[in-house]
Image (cartoon, rainbow, N blue to C red; front, side):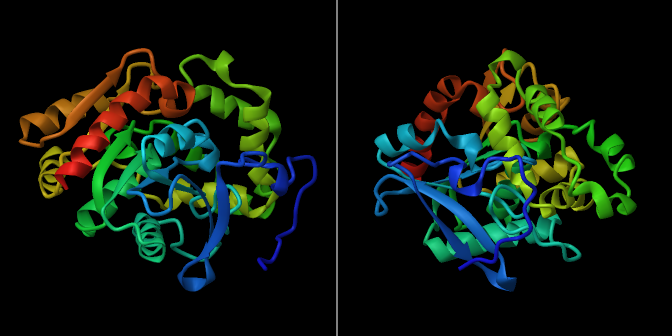
Amino acid sequence: MRNSPPRIRGRLAPESMFPAGRADIRTCYVGLSGGLSLRIAEAGDSSAPPIVLVHGWGASLYMWRAWFAPLAQAGYRVLAMDLPGHGLSDKPQGAGEYRLARQVEVLRELFEAEGLAGAGVVAQSMGGTIALELSVRHATAVGALALVNPAAFGRAYLQPPARLLTPAAVERVIGWVVPRWATGRAQRLAYADPSRVTEQDVDEYWAPSQDPGYARAMRRLLHEFEWRRQPVDHMASRLQSLASPPLVVLSGRDALLRDARPYVTALQRAGAVLHLLELPLGGHAVNEEEPEAVLPGVLAYLAIALRRG
């Protein structure tokens, strides 16, 4: 039994959070090194080829709510997790817990624990940086990689001012002061059409903040995670080391990540091979806002890339 941290009232109860009411999705907790416990959600045949879904900063496996059924129906075992600090997973507060290297190690351990070697991975924003690093460092872990507006390819221009506004001193109180309106505002920034964010969406995104460790974890990620993109030549070399060229999904109305398209062009000129899916009207979280626009291209890519693998 997991120990329940102190809870702030007013949010959705943990048992009411997604995927509550979804008979096609099963959940459990997986224990990893250091006592870390991750919540995972899974759909489809457990013996089918695995597809792992990795969310971005401040999100949770709720981001992929529209992806479970289509991927399972396509013949895959679908698995999504709440990354450390997010959703209902543990929110460690030790030094270095939210550095890129640690996040990659957590994902590697999950792959090992769940028998996911050679899985297809679909990852958004910060999750894309983690999944790409896993692919480079552990060549046999990932069989195919689809990156949706990956933070590693753009400039997260709000991160520097966010760091200035969250010095270490605010950790004493930040866990208790996450207003619902701020959560809704952040989610609407991630959409090209803010009107598509529902009240249920805001409640689901606000719910993890009932654990005071959530806001502290978000602050740690802002300060500890590797947000700067690498020089073009270095990144191109790393992409060339992958077993299968990745699919990169870029949105034309991404308000949170800038200059990703010129960076991709520079990577291609430097010899990197990648597949590109451009959605001119999509926002930063286009996989969540318009799954119907992203899923067909991702499914087609996975079918070819995993068969090749």
